[in-house]
Length: 122
Image 1: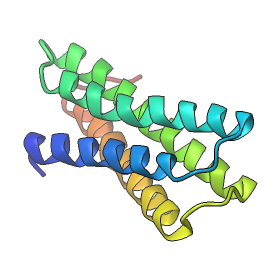
Image 2: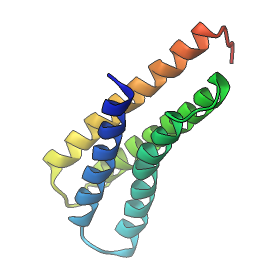
Image 3: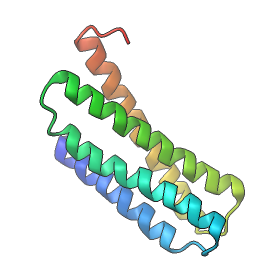
Image 4: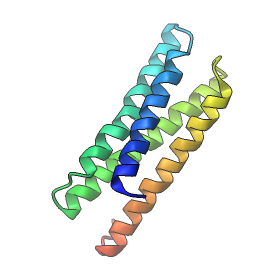
């Protein structure tokens, strides 16, 4: 997958999460969870763009770690919504969970590869 394809994929993930969140009922508790998920999913897309502009291998790696953490946080909030059994489009929720999980796998694998190539232990 090219950088441009992954930029588009992360942006579409953020857009799809936003659309999903717009369909949820409004109440204080759901709003808090929604806001956290909105922040983390949009951060995946925004920070991946920053990864693509990394100035060095170390900068690239550090920014990629942030994207990985935000993707994992997005996965957490999606699973949290599922666990709370919040009334929603469950088919869309499962799609988003799957996509978040795949993004975590992609970014984690990228981090591992970069560390191996550069002989980084930590």
